[in-house]
Image (cartoon, rainbow, N blue to C red; front, side, top):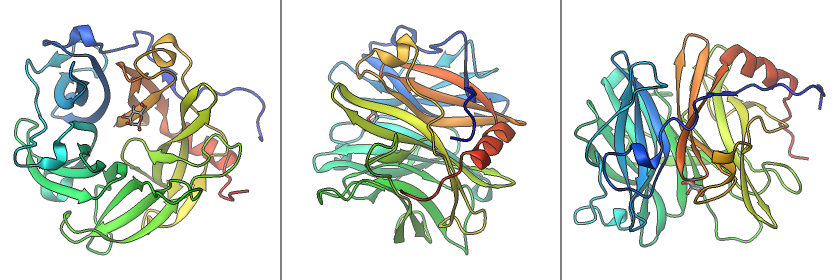
Length: 319
Ligand code: BMA
């Protein structure tokens, strides 16, 4: 606690929520937790839409300025395919998009809600119209996964959050490596959940994919606090070494963004801010997040301010 003045790092777009269920050209229950990227001069969101059965799929929205005038596909863009991919039995959720310059395509890492629990699947696309599925890449229970945009020592790297059934060990962010994006190994914890009263005790997960900065890979992650009135999802920052992303360089002591507005506090699941995507424009980062599992909202920050704040709020010890 080095600074007692409140510093608002992410500023909410005054027009929030930017996309709501009524904006979807077909019947839906909710729209939230979108992956984000740039395509040409547009911002593209790959939105999680939950239908009235309770099953989620992904649909594309694009906009020139990334704030207003979204053009939404008139039909689901990427549907679960339980016939050929049984892991999609109960839908696909929470996509994280990474553009891979080397391959000139995007990876979409998403949660397949399988009959054995949520797991991580991976697909690639060159146009967000057709998708090539690589299938399951992490068994259940695992979520909150995204690729780095480059290889390390020739291998791809992925952050993800497996959950152990072993009581009391916590759920942490892991890193794994692969020669081909399909077969993953050398798994290790890179960002452990804290314990006790901390905002990020017991269960954390990656939010959007890492962003490369001059100081390291910038990580935004969520902490899930279990309270007497349910779960509370809040966000904090971490930094991983540019050359060796298994090395944790810095980590927030405090959370930086939490449910406060009506559309974050009340929805299908109350008190949730859940970002799966962000895009940069110079120094600015635009964060797209689900509000209370019901709508999509936007908040912006300046990357140098995030990095500077992290220097002053760095606490990697778990005490
Ligand atoms: C997480 C994910 C998210 C969801 C959040 C709050 O476990 O399933 O999709 O937004 O819970 O319900």
